[in-house]
Length: 221
Ligand code: ADP
Ligand code: MG
Image 1 (spheres, rainbow, N blue to C red):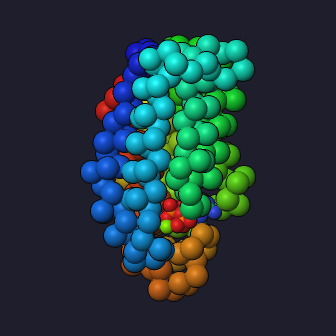
Image 2: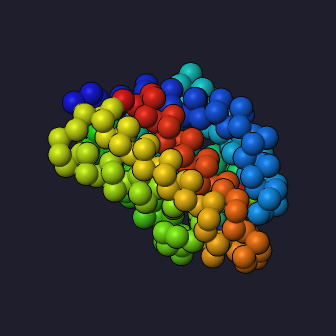
């Protein structure tokens, strides 16, 4: 099985900073339909700060968390979490911060993991999003991308799929889940204030999560 190295994970995080900068207007436009028009701005700000922090860490200036050394998965993910919580704001800052915090606490490998461990980390991260936001599948949130994606990733992992196969299977379900948010009525977050009027629009967080999984499937394979 192809291993997910710490360098690949850094490349993924750097690519997310590019992707959210390219999609800043699009995500913000989606959020202007059913929210407060800041989702793209929030993620662009957050992930460009993540890029800056990783560059600082990698140049050896900063010690990692809890004696893990500056270059382990756990300190990398902890840094991502803290940076997102500090800089993103909004619901998505707390939720994505929790996602990466749970991952940093659950990761067992130091610099290299297999696809199975990656799936189990995504599962831990998404459990954190559920606990923090009290949302379920069908509420028209980022979970409508993540939960179907995780089911496909789990199936591919238990049938012995490669890391690339696991992530491709996840992406397929992520896209379907994201598209399904269009016809849903929002039951959580700011969009829920609109009630029926939230129907007919994609959920911005479902779209940004799909971009996260798409980028993972291109880079972590
Ligand atoms: P805010 O809504 O505070 O302006 P953002 O615009 O950055 O924050 O993020 C909005 C996205 O956050 C939504 O599109 C939705 O996917 C996600 N979200 C909001 N509330 C929840 C929740 N309780 N659980 C999961 N995701 C949520
Ligand atoms: Mg918003």
